[in-house]
Each structure stands twice: as C-alpha cells, then as structure tokens.
Image 1 (cartoon, rainbow, N blue to C red):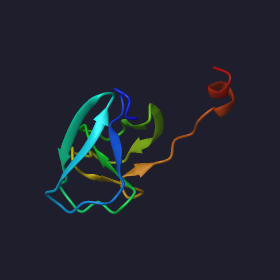
Image 2: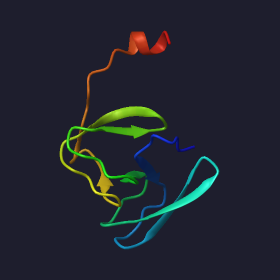
Image 3: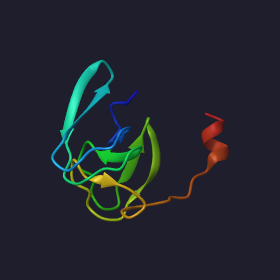
Image 4: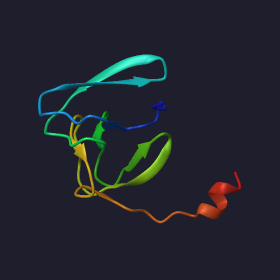
Length: 93
C-alpha cells in the first residue's frame, strides 16, 4: 500500500511513455501519466522530487534524488543515490 508520504510507486507490468498508470494511495484510486518508458517492476515518480530530496516508498527512505525528478518520470539507479542509514536505531523504534 502506498503511504501518504510516498513519492514513488512500482509499475509492475511496465508502461510506455504517455500511458496512464493507476495506483492506490490508501483507499483512493490515483493515476499518473508516464513521461518516458518505465520497465516492468521499476519505480515512477508520483510527486515532484527535487534534487537532494528523499525518495520514499512504502513510507521508507530508499535513496536521494541526484537530479530533479518530475512527476511521471522513471526513478532508477540513474537518478537516485544510496544514503547512509542507522539501521540499529531504526529497528529499536
């Protein structure tokens, strides 16, 4: 389930540029138009993500944006970077 703070979703079957992708945010059905081809099981931005902002999926930070990522864009290893995390303190919460 997509959480209210998520800014990406996974496109399970892939999508061509200009296609509408549907996803649920809680109980609400939402959609986004792709700006480029999205391969199967890859992420798409469902909110604008500025350079340096966190990429959030399922309520968790999964990386940082290396460049501005517009809505509908492919989010991949080409435009995100890994961020250091303190897993010990996260698990103790």
